[in-house]
Image 1 (cartoon, rainbow, N blue to C red):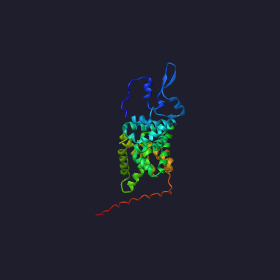
Image 2 (cartoon, rainbow, N blue to C red):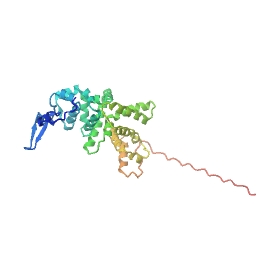
Image 3 (cartoon, helix red, strand yellow):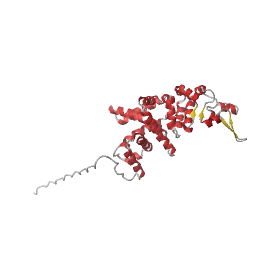
Image 4 (tube, rainbow, N blue to C red):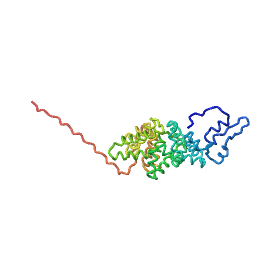
Amino acid sequence: MVLADNVFGTPEEDALRRDFTINALAYNIADFSVIDYSTGLSDLEQRLIRPIGDPRVRFTEDPVRMLRAVRFAASHDFVIAPAAWESLCELASTISRASPARLYEEMQKLFLVGSARTAFSLLEKSGLLATLFPSLGHWISENSNRLALLDANLKCLDQLYQNGAPTPPALFLAALFGPSLEEEALTLHRDGIPRRQALDATCAALMKEISRTVTVPRRVGARLCDILALQTSLHRIRPRRPASIVNKPEFGEALEYLRFTVETRREYQTRLEWWDAFRLHAPSVTPSEPPTDEGPKKKRRKRRRKRRRTRQTPAT
C-alpha cells in the first residue's frame, strides 16, 4: 500500500500519480486548453472509468480506489473498464485493509448523493459489500427477495436526495440494515425478550461487527436504533400522546423510514396518511382518531358515585 505520495513534481508526474484517467486532466490558463497526460478525454467520451496503469497494482496501492471507481460509475452513469472490473472483483476482499474511518467517509459519498441504488448494485456484484458488511451479505444470500427489498429502499433514499430533502446517515443505515435488524429483533422478541431490548441487542451486535471495517459514529448508531424503535408507535392504530412522538428528535427520519415501508412492502398506508395529516396541523390541536378497520367504539359508562349516607343521631 502507498501510505504517502504527496511529493512535488512536474504537472505530468502529478497527473500520472492519480487514480483514474479522467482525473489526470489539467487546465492550461495561458491558452485555455485541456492537457491530457493519458487517455482521459477519450475515456470521458466513452464514459469509462479506467485506472492509470495496471489496475491490479493501483487497487493494491490504495484499496479505497475500488470504492471510488464504484462511486464515479454510479454517480456519473459511467462503466468501469473490463480489465479494471475484473481486478476489482478479484481484490474486493482487500478493502478491509483501508482505514475504517476513511471507509465511513466513502460510504457517505456512495449512498448520500442520489446514486445509492446503483452503487449498492455494484458493491453487491463485485463482492465489496460482503467484505464491508458480512452479516448483511449473508442475510441477502439466504433469500433473493431481500436484495429487491433493499434496492427499493435505496430507490426511496435517492428520491429524497433528488427532491432536495436531507438524507442523514442514520436514515441511510436504516434503509440498508433496517429490514434485517427488524427481522432478527422479532425473532428474539418471540423467544420472550422485550421488544426494545431485542432491538437494542441486534443494533449493538451490528455496530460491533461493522466497526471492524467501517467506523460508524456512536451517535449515528444510536439514532439508527431510535428510528427502528419508534416504528412500533407509528404502526399503532391509536397512538398515545402523538404530539410527544412528533417532538422526538428522530421522528422525521422515523417517518421517512415508515414511508419506505409503505413504498416497498405496501404496509401501513393508513398510518402514514394519518401521521402526515397530524404533522400538517398545529401540534396543539387534538387529532382525530387514526383510521381503523374496527367498528365504532362503545362509549364507556361512567360509574355513579355512591352517596355517603349521613348518620343521624337520635335526639336526646
